[in-house]
Length: 233
Image (tube, rainbow, N blue to C red; front, side, top):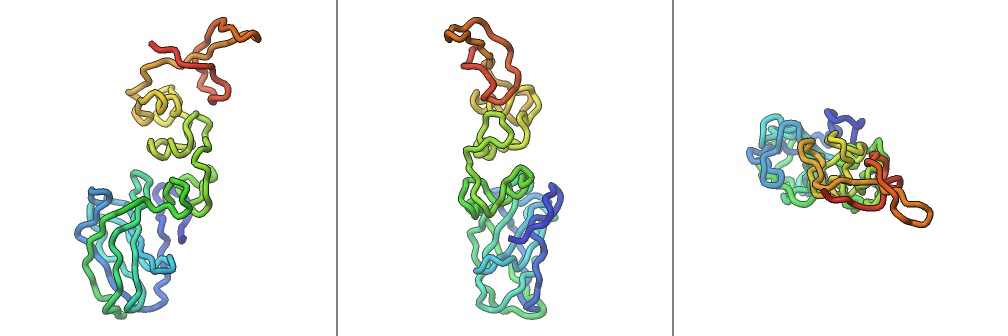
């Protein structure tokens, strides 16, 4: 996969080399990600059957990506993938286009792109762009990562963080004083500082005999250092 340095503002699909000197210019008036128009900054990549990037562009007007020069020859089968920057998700596209009428003038073709499943090349349950975005934490879109790991030690596994759209490098994504794992377990929104769990986590302190002798407030430490149960309000 062609990528550049990890940056929230940087491009994900690095520009391809148009060494064939011919191809098509795709454009789309209806660019859809899971039923919604693509947002400004989202990216589109065109790939040949070998998975080589042959064209790319960035959405500049909601729902549109303008012209995307795609190099190739007549008969080449081109598939597409799109990145939703705001959700940190990468999707395959249901449309597959067989190139026809390629020329050095890049004959223009109008196509409709509608996303399908998330694109996850290593089948670990976390899509490629998300793993690339958080690569500083050890994630790699081309290498299987155990979804049961907990990169930030907050009690939420990496796949739980992925599904909840939380930051796997922050123990408390919304900064409300409750660790992501606590909020996910309690059913409160770990991305909303105004929503907190309906129960209080308490650290019970047992004697050697195992009797409960008291409690202390939750320290925010990783689960391995916490107490032994929930204490409801």
